[in-house]
Amino acid sequence: MKNRLLSIAIILVLSASLAVAQDQTKMSFGILGGVNFQNLNGKLSSGDDLENDMLMGFHGGINIQMPIAPEFYFQPGLMYATKGAKYTEGSLTSTTKLNYIEMPLNMVYKASLGNGFFMLGFGPYLGYAIGGNVKTEGGSISLEQDIEFKSVVETGDPLTVPYYKAFDAGANIFIGYQMAGGLFLQLDTQFGMLNINPEDKRILTDKSSKKNTGFGLSLGYRF
Image: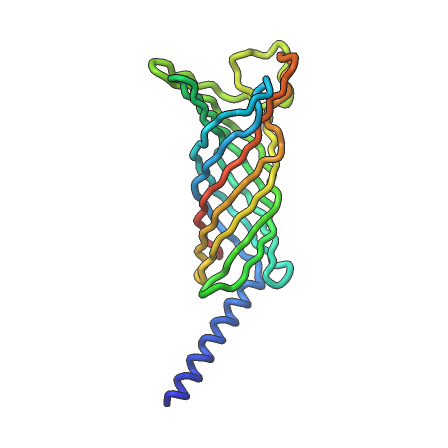
């Protein structure tokens, strides 16, 4: 009787393992969202380093996971993400918020671990800003200005308007765990590689640069 029960248990385990393995050979879809902790790193027009603080934001979107080799997948996606930074000087705090539509193009390694899968992903991302603002607060002062996106700031452009480039690109890295039922959790990191500060013809010697950097925590479901 014990041998029969053991045989049945082994068959059930092997059947479950085979079913999971077969699922991993098919294309799957994922939906995910979570929080960001972003910053703008770079230099001022004088060449001094920026001294910004991180800004909390959020992200959400979808992706497709396509098998290309055993345990390796191509995972393109479409995401909405908020980025930016905070800067404090004296009693004034300036908060820059940038809203992006992004397309991550990741390669993902998935290996069986326990009842689920360990995940390691990496690849480039492309981003395009669709809006944003800069809000300055302190004491009785509260001023909010919409960001204008352009690659070159001309000599006649207003001095009071904040300017950024709309296009961004960089690298993604993430590590996570997917449960057998499809629920997954991952830690994401992004390194912006493009200077999103436009060329400013109003400044004779402009050494300024800004790049998006940050990390986030995502919760999602794959089906």
